[in-house]
Amino acid sequence: MQSDNKTAAILVIGDEILSGRTREGNAHHLAGVLNAVGIDLKEIRVVADEKPLIIEAIHALDSSVGGRYDLLFTSGGIGPTHDDVTADAVAEAFGVGIEMNDEALAAMRARWEQRGVAVTGNRLRMARIPLGAELIPNKFSAAPGFHIGQTYVMAGVPEVFRAMVDAVLPTLPVGRAPFSESLDLDRGESDVADDLKAVADSYADLSLGSYPWHRDGSYGTMLVIRGLDGARVAAAMAELKQRIGA
Amino acid sequence: MQSDNKTAAILVIGDEILSGRTREGNAHHLAGVLNAVGIDLKEIRVVADEKPLIIEAIHALDSSVGGRYDLLFTSGGIGPTHDDVTADAVAEAFGVGIEMNDEALAAMRARWEQRGVAVTGNRLRMARIPLGAELIPNKFSAAPGFHIGQTYVMAGVPEVFRAMVDAVLPTLPVGRAPFSESLDLDRGESDVADDLKAVADSYADLSLGSYPWHRDGSYGTMLVIRGLDGARVAAAMAELKQRIGA
Figure 1 (tube, one colour):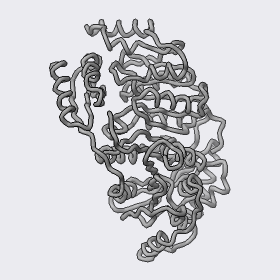
Figure 2 (cartoon, rainbow over the protein chains, first blue to last red):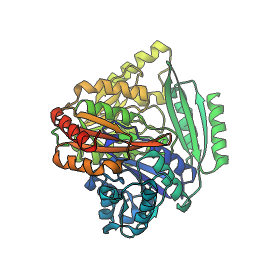
Figure 3 (tube, chains in turn orange, yellow):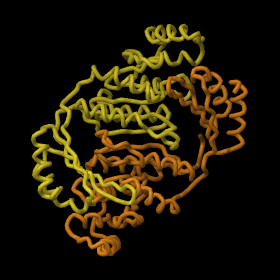
Figure 4 (cartoon, rainbow over the protein chains, first blue to last red):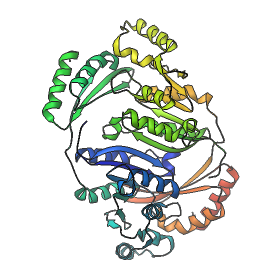
């Protein structure tokens, strides 16, 4: 699919995903959001909670530090415990220091005092923010995410991640959202492969995908046509339906 | 966590994941399987159905072609349609040709003739296998996966992917599966961060993780201790429980 939209990557940081304990859902949520606002998600990576791995991934993915994509969104590793190393890794990746952030600290103190929680020890780790970063607030937890370079650093807890996505969304360089039409067939994808290819060859500006499924002993294929020009998508789908007799 | 276990990566190939249409589940399934047999999953990547991206990822991840990990497992892009480019990309990544594979073709013909399906056109694409690769059979579909270098190429359809994982599992260089103990607390992770760090410092051979959760307006923290020595894991958990009064 041809597009002038901005490109993006998601970096998920978390041992619990790699060990199979937790099924990742934040990247799936953000993928849908980015698609809807016309930002082209090009890659997702999941790495462990280890600073060198996180730094390397940021350098590979964020164009502001030599990486490949216009925008990078991270999920996970910004909590209060010893295994939360994302903020330090991001500071190193951008070559800046990391310090207690007054704005973050004030917000966290206010919230904790309200709840009668002592503001001590490792709890304060969550107010450590790379120098030059802007905070990403959220309504669920006192600890903010932050934005530096083209990287948006957000929490791993799904509710908090979503709240942070909501907070940054109005600031993102949105593009043209693709139009999409789909057709669910109770036929194997081999049956329609030749026709699908013929239509794909005629509509090089569109993206034609074929997704076989198996459910309860039956099977079929979901055909999806995506593109920035709704009329072209509709025309391609009409031609495809005519060809395959659907 | 210290380990002599083999390392692995998973490469998921599929536009439908990046567009947010489909929530990825194959990597989650395989992550659990690898953990159970003592293979350390270190990274997951998701890239689009584009040959250059797939080739680059294989070169980055498979140690037999200069990449980082002992084993690489791919999911997706080996069907019969024009957007299935994984087999060609793998052949290029390994610098080998790709040809109609007699063994794959015979198996596919036998299955299709049984079902009265014509063996023509793009359907035959699924029998194109990189030279030197070994087939990975599966009980769900006629089209095989394959294994070349340290890369295991498998289907994206979940049932087929799982059948292929089952087929390759007995051939993998299994290691020592980690022991794991977990503790679910109805307290925020800030409350236990200091104690968790103290225990982590005393047990540098173990991995201590802290996973906050929010559900139905309440919140809590799941603490997980993992390691290859079950007695050490148990001792660390006992010390942690004593410290936090759980």
